[in-house]
Image (cartoon, rainbow, N blue to C red; front, side):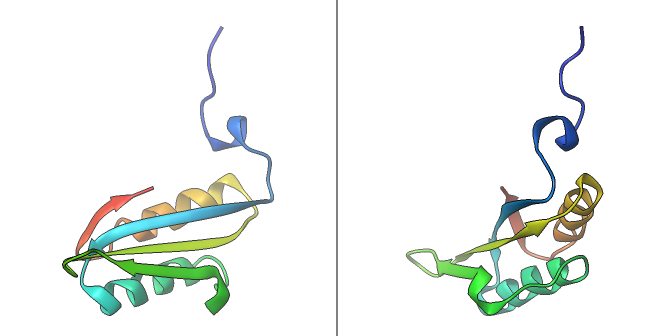
Length: 90
């Protein structure tokens, strides 16, 4: 018996999903995250939250949106991985 093989086995689509990216670059990094997601889905200003680290070295950017398929989810993560200064994706 095999376990789940992908997001389609663990989630029901469409669903609300929060992407969180942490990286260097301040506001430039935040804009890069939003633009990377916009390649695959519309992003409203209300859906974006960002916060700087205590010393301002890192920026945490959260974006909540509706994801319609496992392929869309994978495509967004692939796009996010190309951002300069990215340190972590959740």
